[in-house]
Length: 286
Image (cartoon, rainbow, N blue to C red; front, side, top):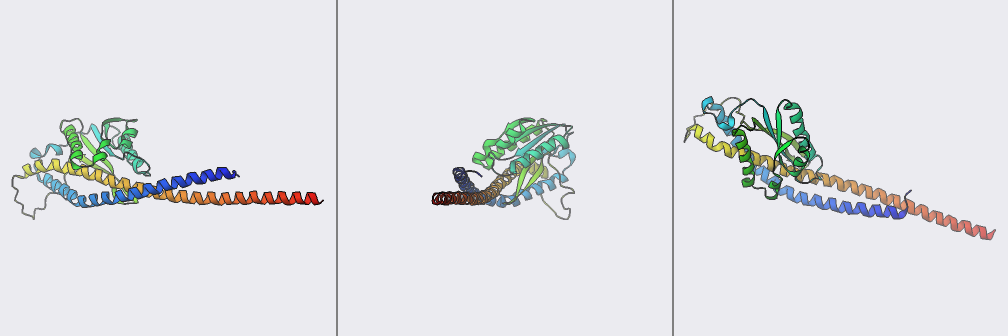
């Protein structure tokens, strides 16, 4: 059994760790509320805009289709992996890295795959096994639509110029504080919705349908990427809050076990001292 001083040191160490994890949990909980409100308010707008453009794109003639909807033979694929800049959030980052690696090694095993990292953890992991053409870890320092739009413009430019034939986004979709869903969405080319716009609805387009699509598509793509990053940002705080909650519970349980061990060791030491005194007294009497 460990000596009393060693057990006391371990109790002190575990208690300090428990205070840190508890504080991190409260910080993430406070940040989660703001991030959750932002993505909850944004989702309906982003989903409706995407649905509208998919409907409109499906009704365009092949010759008048958008340059962002051009279907090419897939030889070069770009995977946009969205993680966080920091750890201590459970399997949040590793799930994205595993999914990005699975896409590269299985789904696109016969294609040339490159990565765009959004988040330091993605850049650190994916750069070891593949080419990271752009690292955008600093976007989380000031997460605004304007900063994300610059990344989206870079992706659109690479697709239009033919550097890549397909672009996929891998991110964690926020469901609740304890649950994040790994999502893979095709960013480019735009996927037309199956079927066309409801023919029973009589729409008047001003200006033309083609001009509307060409104007709104870049905005829709920027919004899609922004929504994905916002989803990931909320998921990160939810995952970290859950991980720190579990860590705090585990630290509390370990501290209680160490205190019990310490009390048993202290009781045993006291008992041994009493036995030695009694034994010494009996030896003197004899």
